[in-house]
Length: 463
Image 1 (spheres, rainbow, N blue to C red):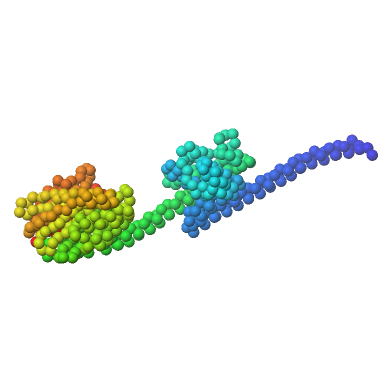
Image 2: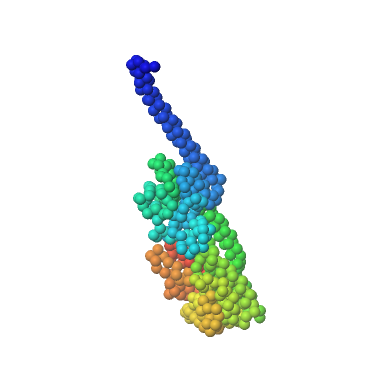
């Protein structure tokens, strides 16, 4: 049957009408797929933000927060791998990386030689120097970096790369990276990645700040506790020894002092007075101080004199004192009522002796090396004792270097000459006058300048 021209015309017209309809249906289907993809992407972003907010609100560990961010980023942009590195001054430290993420930093040859398991462990735990690393370029790009194959020397197994620095309060603290192995990211992926990274920076930055505040509070609590313990270790009063008036005082530059003084009753109607200064300040110095106090008390009661006690103390603490620390000390043994004093000095500032009869001040300088520097042979060879006799009204002053090294606003030190001059002026008022008024003079001299070092004074007056 032959179609008439009319029928052909109708058929052609129908086809002309049908083609736009088919094109429109195709476009609608594509649009539906696009909307569906957008909806799925929106849901992934919502889930990411929800989990991030939940982790922050519940104060989860930082490790959990790193994991939430990295796994979420990989999911949001459909990446083949993602990683977060913490940025230190000279190094990158891994926060978290997904199992599928290829190595983005240089793996040492010796680690590679140990096999895949060693490489995986190193990537999760090992720090790497930033200098020369591919990822270090991300730190300097505030807006982030997007590189595809051919645009940069990408690591093996990477065809497309997103990298953004995470900053808080103007400081970069981490970088966030997402990669694909074969396919390319879209422009929309880049916008989504940067948006998620921005939220991550805000949330993680606040979490780090919160943790820092909590850690500071914890340390402050521990320091206050340690300070209370240390106060117990210092004498709770002044001794009442026949023939002497003894006074001591300690002012710590920080909560924990590296200075200490002690009074010890000894066999044979004798008494011990010790002062010491641990190099450094803070908890480490305080711990060494406590150790010295306990050890010297034990050795003092069984030693013939101050040199023997300090020698035994040095041998005991030598292995426990760090190489960058030492302890200076002066130890005097007083005979009950007689005025006879035997003194040994282990690298400590020379005690000052005020003679009432002349009004003069003398520096007492028996030889000695600081505790903790030598194991024993050299220390004991150079350590010397000195005997003096105090007449009525004479005053012997022990002090730590925080006294003569106290500075004023101009950076000028109180100095040994000024200390000797002021001690000579105050000594006529006895031990009590010295330890009460000398600290006040130091405060007036320093003015607005903060106290940098611990200050300890012990005065012994013959009555």
